[in-house]
Image 1 (cartoon, protein in one colour):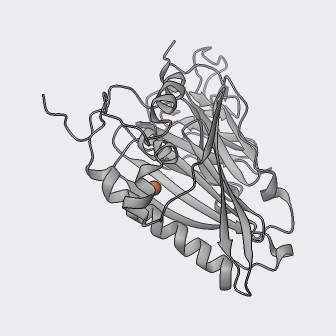
Image 2 (cartoon, rainbow, N blue to C red):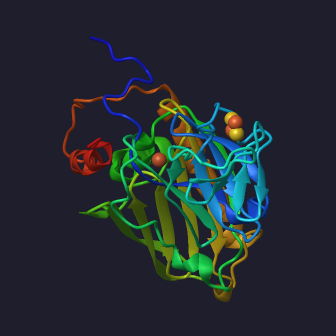
Length: 316
Ligand code: FES
Ligand SMILES: [Fe+2]
């Protein structure tokens, strides 16, 4: 039987997903968003607390992202002015004494860390089973302010994450020579690939470069280059629905190592990361998900990756 593009034998994965960057959300802002195949509303209160809710009011169904407003630390519905606290509970009905106990917005666990607003998604609204990811470089002054690049990709998170476990595509898709074998470790909700390679220096000699890719569930892949060049790519992939992923690369460089994001080696690294992503995209957008792939020696840990990935599809 022929497989069809866009059909996957699993639902949208659970996990922490980026739903905003702090520098893009102002206090008092109420923004309609669509993630996880659901309508949402992203709110930043007057004190700067960020929270993702389900979009629709439990009263008569108004969309709070269209005309809803922040009042202090609460969100006011545009239709009949009910107000909701950041825990989702209704705290005021302007024309009634008694607040119905079921008057509550769906609330996604939300956390702001290192300038990124993360929301926890679980198809059955289950509680987080691990902590929101931490990217310590983003809190340090020597790392440059992130430069963001965005793509909307017709694929699933799993295809993007699987790329790191697929050494054979680096030659064919990205034009690498004989890529050194990465060392890959799977551990609870994370998996890490480390590649050491010798790169020629401009003034002669060779330097060892270390490239580490760490996935935190299906929503975040952090690429760290260390050695002579210290660079960081924070790849955040958020499912829009069952067929589309909102993917961002956020680039930072270590300015203490003499790097700048807009010139020389820093700029070249960023351009190369974008080039590689744009080589992968047409493959992802047109491939089918091969549930029983025919693998051979040299295909690396694709089977182990898929066993690891199963944990994000548990619906219980
Ligand atoms: S629909 Fe929100 S207050 Fe009535
Ligand atoms: Fe790739």
